Amino acid sequence: MRKRAKKIIRMFDDAVAAEQQYEFQSAKRHYAKIVELHPSSPEADIARERIADMDTLSNELRIYKRIDRNARKILTEIGMDIVNSPELMELLIEADAIDDDSEQALFVPLREDYLEQCLDMVPKDMAEDPGENAFGTGATAPFLLRPGRDDLQPANREEFEDIVRIAGEFADSLGIFSIPVTTDKSISDFECALLMEEHFSDLKMTTTRNMTDEETSYFSYRDDWLDGTSLITSMTFMPNMVAPFLRSAREGNNLLILDLTIAGSTGPASPEALLTQIHAQVLFMMVLAQTINPGIGCVHGGIPDLLGIDGNLDYSDPGQPLINSAMARLNLWVTGMASAQSGGSTSILTDIPAAVQESEISRDILRTYGVHILRHAMGTLGNLNYFSKEKFIKDCKRERASRKLWLQTRHDFLVPLYLPEDKQVVKGIREILEKGGPKNADHTLTHVGTFLKWQDKLNEISQLKEYFPELDEIAEDVPDDVARGSETGSQTQLQDTFLKT
Image (cartoon, rainbow, N blue to C red):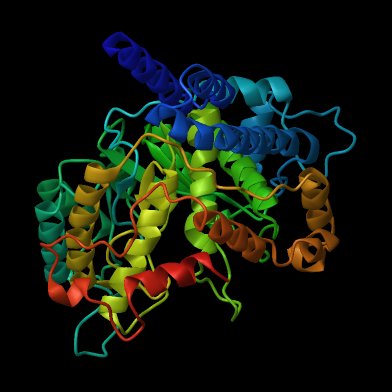
C-alpha cells in the first residue's frame, strides 16, 4: 500500500512539473494515467479537473507562439517607420540589416536572418533577477500627493529622500525600486539615483534621458540598475528619444525597454493584436540595442494599456491586469526574455483605503496568473499621475500580508487565462497602418467589446473552479483602516467588479 501511494505521488509530481515547464500535453498524459490506474485516489479527483485545463493551456500557449511569430513577421514584412531618422537608418544600413528586396513592406523591413541573429544575443537571465511576481514601484508620477494640501507639485529633495528611506524599510516587499515620483529642481535625476542606491541595494530603475554623458556612464554594466527607456511607438520613432536610447545602449546600460501602447488608441483593439504590435515594437528596439552593443542586457517592457469608458487611460479597468498577465506569459512561456509588466495601480485619487484595496486586487490577479517584474504596484494613484507616501506604506504592508497568505495556500498549478483569439492580426495591423490609426480601421470595429467578453468568460469560469483563496481573506496583522473596506464596498465586492463587466 505504501509503495502504491508513493508511486501515485511521484506520478502527480511529474504532472505538476510538466505544467511548470509549459509542457501541457505531457502533463495531461501524466494526469490521465493517474485516473486510469488509480481512479479512487485523491490525486485522481484533482487530475480529472486538470486534464481539461491542460488542453486550454495548450491552446493558450499556441496563441503566444503565434504572437511571437507574427511580431517577427511584422518586422520583416511590414517594417518600422524610421526612414526619417538618419541615425537609425545609418545604423541599420551599416549593419546590412535592411531587407532591400521586400516588395510588400510599408516601411523599413528587417532581414529575417538579421532579426533572429540579434534576438539570439539578448540575454535570457539577469544577475539581479528578483524572481517571479516581484512587485515594486515605477510610475515616476508627476505629482506628490500631500495629505490635506492642494499644492500638487513634484517632490522636493527632502520629500524624495524620505520616500527612499521608507522604500529601504520595505525592501522585503519591493522586487524593484523605480523612480517613484518626479522631483523639482532641488535635486537632479542623478542625485535621486544616488539616494536610491544608498538606501536600496537590490534591483533599481532610473532613466538617464536627462543626465549628462558622465552621469549616464555611471550605470554601465551595473547588474543592480536598469535604464528605463523607449524609442518606438505607433510603429514609428520618437525623435526626442533617439539620442538618449542610442547613448544608453552604447554605454552598456541594462535597458528596460518600454512600450505603453493603448488598445484602440495607439494600437489594435483586440488583445492578441495589441500584444503582437507591442511585442514587435519591443523586439525592434532590442534589435537596435544588440546592433549597437551585442549581448547588452534587455528587459522586455511591453506594457499594454486600456482606455476607460471616458476615453482616458484607466488603471481601474479589470482588463488591465489581464492583458499585462498575457504579455508576461508570452515571455515566461515562449521567448524566455526577462520581462516587466504594469499593474497594481488604480484610477482612484481621493479615497486612499479604496485605492489600497483596488491595488491589492490587481496585484493578486497578476500574481494568480504569474508575472515577472511588476511595476506601478506600490504608491501610485490616479492612473499613475500621483504618488502617495501614505498609500505606498499601506501597499507595502498589504503586500507583506498577501505574500504570507499566498505562501501558505499556493500550489504549482497554472490557471488558464482564456486569451481571446484573433486570426487576422497581421492583416489588421497592416490595415491600421494604412488607414493612419486604429480608429479608422475595420479591424477595430470588429473587436469592439472583446475585452468585456474576455472578462465575462473569466467570471464564468471562476464560478466553476476555485484554485486560489478568496481575495477578501485579510491577514491579522494588517491595520484595521486598511483591512476593513471603505465607502466603495468590501473587497469581495471589488473583486466582483474586477471580474465582471
